[in-house]
Image (cartoon, rainbow, N blue to C red; front, top):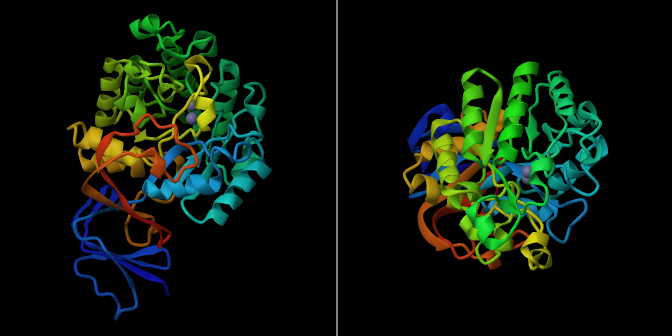
Length: 427
Ligand SMILES: [Zn+2]
Ligand SMILES: [Zn+2]
């Protein structure tokens, strides 16, 4: 029997309302016991000393782009999972806009097999809503679910047709899984490359109005109400979009939302100097939008934090702003940036942060995890919340370096990551 005793730490388990000095005994991949001064079973258990550290349910990032198949030079399932556990993540929801698109059973199976082979974080594939992410005909959702898909999205693209989205939501009722929407009306995005406003005018760059998001958020919430299906809004960025989600939630519509660390930490000002690591979809917006995201995370309008980890090759980002691809990486910066900005910034308490980064993503995707009760899967993250450090992209485990947070001073990081009782990361 394999045993691991995590000893002497502060155990914070929001789902089971535990917060105190407790040891955690893991046996055969499951939580066997939580208590004070647990014996090590006569020396039979491996000991992980966690004195001065905080022990939480493994963090879950439900929005990650691994670039396999298609662009193994940017990220592979293996390198992405390594970056994940280094960032404290024990499970990932991975997006289907690979090449070829993850829109069939075989493609889902491929990702799952690669993740098992990599042996770090768990990987839960999210399948495409439409064949080839073309927004036209629905993909084989049933077959993908049988193969292990946990949700569906055309992320990278918005399902622009209301009729197709209504069909997808109706179809999803059979399975009870969420449809995840990348909310940007493509006809309003047009050639836009950054948030539309004074900044875009000053830089002479084509803008994307926040209304491009708000319109789709409203439309899809209305379709979720019409169908009774579950809708999840990816990377919400605008204050009026947050307001729409709040109103539909009050009505009892089954909508959830996520926000990224870059959207609640950075504004369009980052684009100054044509910084391509400040280019993403949806774009960084204004200070008022950023504040609304923080308020939404605090009051629960926004259910969870997801990184939208989007690796790109150095050369691709080293180009004119308008030509650079969208997206930034986030797995190794998500927790420290969120902790520093939200907890130390006085927006949330730690309990709420762990809820947003572990408990709610598990609930939205109906994954095991997000809980350290007896018998639960032993996915655990050990955090050091006292250490001050500077983000250094040259030290990333990810294959890519496209971060907007290089050089940023942060506090807190994962120092040990345990997946199924097996320690897969140690700082
Ligand atoms: Zn997206
Ligand atoms: Zn994405």
